[in-house]
Length: 414
Image 1 (spheres, rainbow, N blue to C red):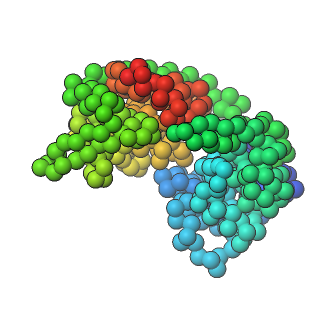
Image 2 (image 1 turned 180 degrees about the vertical axis):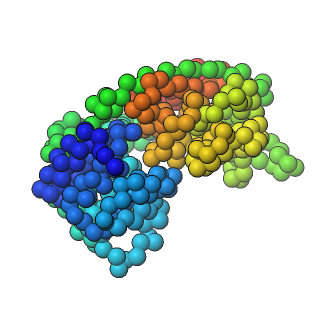
């Protein structure tokens, strides 16, 4: 196979960086070829065995790239949730960490970040981090992505709080009457310090000319849906009977109420017992009526929304990428699990049954159709009239996560 000219340049430059520092951050936007570029760097390093850590849905495409490239090194691909299954007797010369921004939780490290740190400590490997969006919501997300690498530029900071002393403008906010320290205002100097270790490359740099056209479509939900949302907003608790069983919906805190209204306005609800129910098929019916003649990618947020789609679409809908690629069926993917590491290039458009609170989800999932040859993407957002989704949309578009503080302001207008 032949690398694209820009990939070859990044491979040569990346090889120099990782040889010097033992790690490299490839901040390459989606569809620019991060996986194959990392393989090219590995080939230059003449490593024998690579561990490639990624999301479960991306494993198949990474293994295909490996077969296409057909290098001499051995490759083990594993998802983050299965790291405990790695044979401890095996040593890896290089660890590639895909979607590295998912390690960026702060101020405490996530289990995922700790697991990667332990792997690096055990193997003492070269490390390549991959992400199209290294710090999608805050520069503070960089610390735990690299803290497990011995010679990372922040290694003198023994934990995030020490890091924050130098690199974060710490503020306070009041949540439920309590003063909470806010560490999200990371300083731009964080990325300045990372520059020697990071190679950034955008779709524009690669010659992509895609224009993404986003269309908002509003659906009138059933009166019962609006009545339930109104009742819960006022009383914070709803008691009813489902299948001859008493069920409760609680919205007794801002976070709970925000989540429950988010579900209800899209036609589903999860009860305090843990069971869920479809209460309104209006969105699923609208999507089918408008898009059933097209092969599309549908993103949903809550599990019950998938059941609603299946009820309306029947066997015209699939959830596996391989089936989507080999048939004329449309595909339904949960937003968080489907936003990274997969290509929906065969989709005529993307349709969102619901929207996630995360800015990361917004920016990454909407790019799943993009290829170098594609000139236009169409993305449809299906929002309920008078619902919460449009407010969430306005927030995540500005690269901010929708939080309870946003919700409290919006609640007055719902």
